[in-house]
Image 1: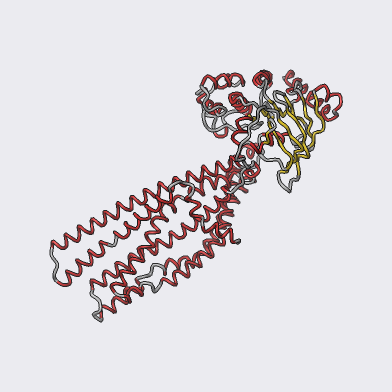
Image 2: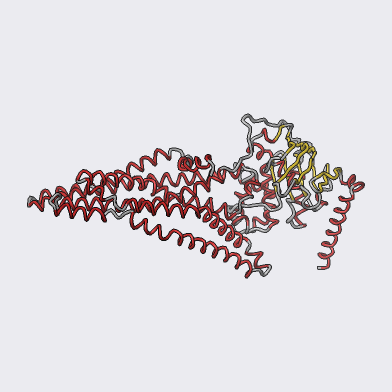
Length: 592
């Protein structure tokens, strides 16, 4: 492991607390109250010692017993109150840290290139954001404050035993070295497999998410048995790995649990010997045993807490991998465009080294207020060009400018305000239809939402839903059809009213009856805007100011419909295929 990586691991706890402002101070207060609570718990032992000592000496009286019982009760109340305050503060800190972590991961994804996000499976992301971060709460809320107290308590008990008799204090440490040796062995064996455990857990989570989300496809193609076996296999593999891992640490872990808290093994024999020689009283022996038992409880807690702390460290370091995802660079001083002409100059782009370059020197200008269409065979680079303009990624080389300003000289948030992007597969959130449309303009009135919905030809089907505009779209919009989701997304785009509009197969799922009306609405509402449309239905873009034919990451030709029909063999083939498919569909409909 590199020196830098080691330093990162050492400062992981500070990294964790940095995601909730003021957490360090509050957690320190929690630790202090935890220590007071545990120390207060020792006071009743001295009260019992005093009563027992008076009894043996024959000096016991009711007032003394009552006095010591009241002191013990008061100490117990202090212990309970301080423990409640400690855990209350630590839980407050823990949940604020969890909130900070989740918001930071979400913000990191929002600012990162899409490729960095897509590199992680849904299961892995869900496992980290939901499960892993949640796993931080118990150790942070309990291990840190209580653990600090349980570290202090054995020290205080040892000092107290030393003041009574140094030989008893040393005897209390008799089994400690063996316990520490077995604990370190456990950590060493466990640490080797912790990363593998995290990977196995993420793999199982990913398989579960994939199986549940793909259940419709699995049923449709009769692959239930194969897919279920793959799903069950991942769970069995995870089970087998965890069992083998636990087996590898079982012996050392049990020995550590046996020896670490075994303070009485040395204290009791030594105390009996001292009492037999007259060097210690029976009451003194009782006090030593009680103090030693306090050490037993703390040592056992420390052992359990150390495992929780180690698990939290691994979790934080794993979450940090997400937090360290590189963001799209943003300028310190932002430049804003005065107009909305888009210029791509010698644009090259590569998703990754294995896939190779997908765009090879694109030179293209989209004039402000113009309607430009991108067409071409699948995999030609059309969607890539559109997403680069929206800066979902940065170009590998070359530049993209809006109004003469390079995209890298604008903040991501500013660019998002300038560009409306509607894709073929539009995501809707599990909230009302109204709120899904209002995402385009968060401060829009209900009337503005209704106007956008009518323009996008979705008001009619919305009115038929059980609760109209207040009907939930369902998880990922699954309560709606593909065409309905597209129309909601278009309504959202219309409400946003951005100066640059990118439509990537935005009407692919729209039925023919609504497509014509929707195209007319889009045409009216995008007048004067810089419009880029990607379409396979060439009839929808035949009136474009300019049609760009992309093939294999290069511009093969560009011009109007008439110009391309005259000189582009590829465009002609695509047009004929489109017309043939449309005539075939119309013939089938007529026969039906």
